[in-house]
Amino acid sequence: AHKGQLSADETQAIIDMDRDHHLHPYQIFDVFPEEGALPIAKGVGSFIWDTEGNKYLDAVGGLWCNNIGLGRDEMADVIAEQVRELSYASPFVDMTNVPAAKLAKKLADLAPGHLNHVFFTCGGSTAVDSAYRTVQMYNNCRGKKDKKHFISRKDAYHGTTYAAMSLGGKAGDHPDFFDFKSDDIHHLSSPNYYRYGKGLSEQEFADKLVAEFEAKVEELGGADKVAAFIAEPIMGAGGVVLPPANYLKRIWEICKANDILYISDEVVTGFGRLGQWFASESVFGIVPDIITCAKGLSSGYLPIGAMIFSDAIFEGISQADQGYYYAHGYTYSGHPVSCAAALKNIEILENEKILEHVRDVGPYFMEQLNTLRDLDMVGDVRGSHLMVCVELVKNKETKENFPEELDIGKQVSNEADAMGLIVRPIVNLNVMSPPLVLTKEEADFIVSTLRKAIIDAGEKMKEQGHW
Ligand code: PLP
Image (tube, rainbow, N blue to C red):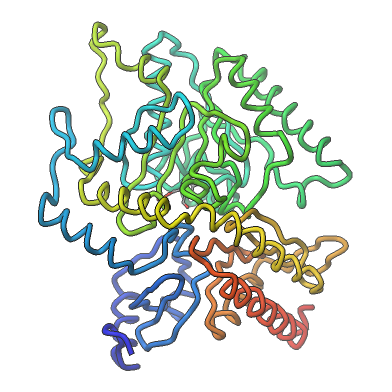
């Protein structure tokens, strides 16, 4: 039993008040009244417990954010100390605080070469929004007022503020009951080779994507009209899409040669998920102009994100003699408690050699997950280190999907839940981003449980005549 454990009646009361008053991100209005949400009351390391005491291995790591593991005493102590010392100070204009200054320096040290400037945000969406606005400011300040178009990709996910969601390209995130900014934001093809590379070698697929980028720049009126390209190194919510070899690097080279800024959205890939502090340069050979990050920056202990940007952008926007000022900022930019938590989180990642651990356990996890390919329903297993997904198909040869309304990913995750494993369903996918402290035994548990869950969901599909 844990301290937060409740009886069945008390649990039901929580579910009821939540359903009646709490609008959740991405709430699905038709099923929610019936199902409600599972109340979670405790977390330690890679495990969570619901209010009734059922234990789960959380292979989603919260929401790609639990990097160092849940419930660590050192984090609790640092957060409590910082609250006692200074729980808030305004970051605006003429004040700072000790953790914010130290964290900015630390991020500048960890980020690639010329990325030496940090703007703190409340999370990933606000980091992307800040990048969007800062790029506009940069071009306005240097007299390039027509250089305004942003190029993104279908299946991208960059958050849910207005600009961030408009930059995102997942079909399901652009329903017609929401509005989006579209005058200056354009989406190229998704780089998903499994889905869209039919009849092409990986190299030919990359060639096609690069040519599409070049054609889009031309179509928009040339590089003088294009402000930036934005991309996640590996698409996360769009289905753990690994870019075909060298495609991102080739686009970066075109950007560099044509004064188009490259924004690398490392909200998921930053802080160790791929065994590196940042994936852009270490994994993909790209030195972007801006890196956006959040999630693993504090391992989800407190909300914080950051936009880390280049010397050139800073010089462009900060010309004092022109009277420029940065008319952008949040009450919680550089929040002392969030920054203290992020500093401690980074110290833990360093001291416990967690990135090295990811480079060991990550390939092992991938290798084990790949054994699921023998199942009839598993069309693809893909990812890198601790950012992975399994794609479920009705027909392995044709890659035909189950009808979307069957929500096959959810069927599998329901089976897994019942066996104590949380995996994230996204339509026909099960996505996983376990805590970076995952052990090989825990990796084995994930793979064997997921195998059973896929088999059981498949049996049910057959019984119901869907397969
Ligand atoms: N960018 C990427 C790549 C993400 O995966 C996410 C969240 O999943 C975001 C931005 C948005 O971050 P947040 O939810 O912290 O606003």
